[in-house]
Length: 104
Image 1 (tube, rainbow, N blue to C red):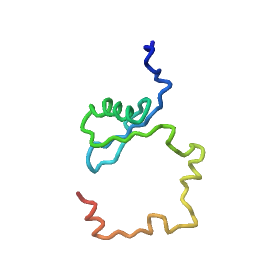
Image 2: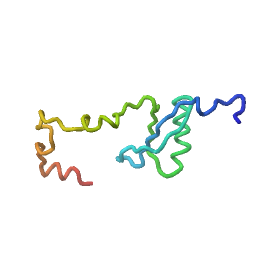
Image 3: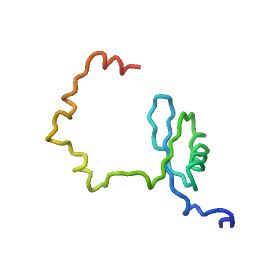
Image 4: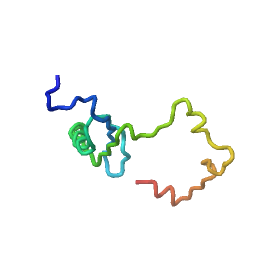
């Protein structure tokens, strides 16, 4: 049972947490937390997810603010446009400089 001064978790916003482990690494989804506001969400995310290892950066986003595709529309949404074939990967040319740039 919650103490009288505490707000039940089901009234707090759900936040998605993304973390970056290395300086040039991508942010990956770490999990979800509940918090009353952005500041508390960031502090909670730090407390919960940064203890698992080195974390360089944390992002939090309110779950209701995420815009996503609908599973039923996947085929039409991601289908490549046949009227703009120049956007397909075979039209990109790579040079030796591009390949050397990719190497660490």
